[in-house]
Amino acid sequence: MLLPPELAEIKMQIRDVAREYGLYFYDVVFHILDFSGINQVAAYGGFPTRYPHWRFGMEYDRLSKGYTYGLQKIYEMVINNDPAHAYLLSANNLVDQKIVMAHVYGHVDFFKNNIWFSKTNRKMVDQMANHGVRVRRYMEKYGLEKVETFLDACLSLEHLIDYHSPFIRRSEKKSRRMLDEKEDAPQRARKFKSKEYMNDFINPREYIEAQLEKVRQSMEKKKGFPESPEKDVLQFLIEHSPLESWERDVLSIIREESYYFAPQGQTKIMNEGWATFWHSTIMTQKILQDSELIDYADHHSGTLGTRPGVINPYKVGVELFREIEDRWNKGRFGKEFEECEHIAAKKAWDKQLGLGREKIFEVRKIYNDITFIDTFLTQEFCDKHKLFTYKFNRETGMYEIVDRDYRKIKAKLLFSLTNFGQPLVTVIDGNYRNRGELLLKHQYEGIGLKQDYARDTLKNIQLIWRRPVFIETVVNDEPVRIGFDGKEVIEEKIAAGQEDAAEEVEA
Image 1 (tube, rainbow, N blue to C red):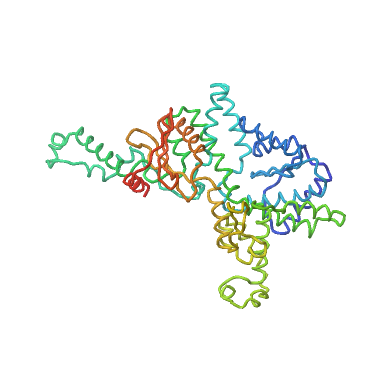
Image 2: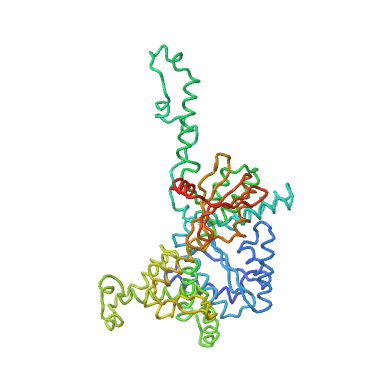
């Protein structure tokens, strides 16, 4: 549904103001939907043309019930694309629509300019439609139940990718033919000395090829399979699993979409903070009318509201951006400021540098959530916003404050953000026990795997790998190996020698 004339005019006004502030974004196409329509789009992750799957129906049911019972409400949704697509809720009043439009332009500026989005497909709306067509064709050809069962297995593994791989330039993989053509390969084959005219008799071709094959096998055994731990488990499964062509294509679709959504998870706090910073700036300085002040303050405060035990990305993000702008305007950074030990002098510090706006645009460009928090979360910020760590006291039956040290707070935040809180799993052996079995390793960081989740995930990997699958992890402070052979779950303790061998392979 096209924007009515009043909203179309407001859109152009907000767009022009955003550009005056230095935001640089793709064109934005706004759509107006009722609550049912926007819940449908949200259930599909913003892409209504995606492949059909029951989980999207469950998500729609959850969103619909949340709206009906007043538990949640979707004010806006924006898609990283060129042009960007944004959805407005028709029931929103005019003030809300203004806030949402300004918020959207902040998001689209972030999508376009943040380096972590630089490798994403900017035509993903079309690509998602293509994915949907391919999956529907497979369902028609092979049956809905068969394809959906395989989709269930693939979707349970969608986080097993290497989130940094789009930015890593890897060496070209060498095929067996390339190995044959290497100049030094024949030299490594054992030959008997002979004159040139007798060489074919003394060193027959069959003998040389047999020697080369031994060299290849020795090199492959020495290097391992894979040569080093593989973080992109999905890519490994795509390349080496005995899948049918349609199964390989479906798994590739899941992997491609996982990489598309990955930067949004890596920059959730920054992205929402940046959009909130600009919608508040644009609204309060240029767009907001006097009669709209109360409604704006009410809805904006609701966006930034916090509750115990939950990090509000809007609040943390916008406050950190404001803190950065203020610090760089006043020169509250650098060696001189850090080494100042006079408390009153530090509080009154103001060099009037005016570098704040330039600095936040720089931060917007090159940081993600982890580096953002690691670099700019300070003790002063934690004190100002009353941040602390806490834990449950079994003796009193209450949660209690543990520490207000910003380093402890930062460590907790960074731990929860690393890998989106998902376990780090790598492939360490694709020919485990020399029987074509798959061995994975969980990078234990003090928190063990959920046993029921681990077993179900192993079953789904085994469905793809078609042979037994194992994972090494830690349970109750003891190294164990959990596996699934297609019939039953196997769990065994890892002896000290076996554990060392596994570590050597990983190294």
